[in-house]
Length: 113
Image 1 (spheres, rainbow, N blue to C red):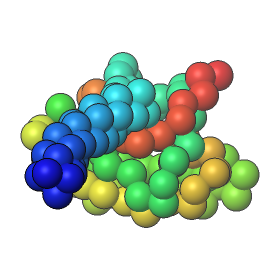
Image 2: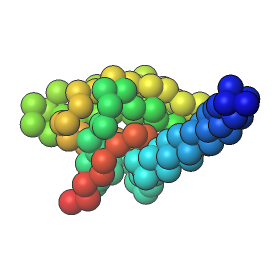
Image 3: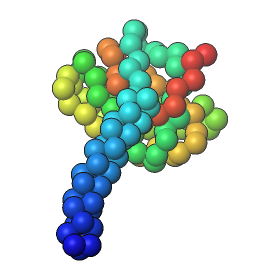
Image 4: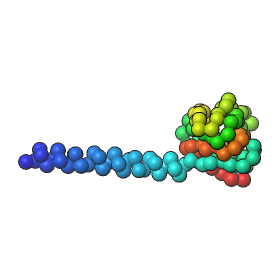
């Protein structure tokens, strides 16, 4: 009887844990996704939460990230509507972003100046 009860408890606990984990992850991504809109030069600064960030946009554009301390530039050569690219940036540093159209960037912290 104890083995059946244990299997049943595990059978209930694992799916619940997976559901809670997926809801938490989706909330985390939603919280750290930001859409930059407007002209070519954005006033917002972004800070990667991880070393890699994902960028997508609604226009054909090059996306340029500039480290605000060293002024070193990192470029995503070309993205089009519906296409996304990943770039590796240093975690904890702040970057300005340049690109046309609306750019959706995740996971990042945002500082508006």
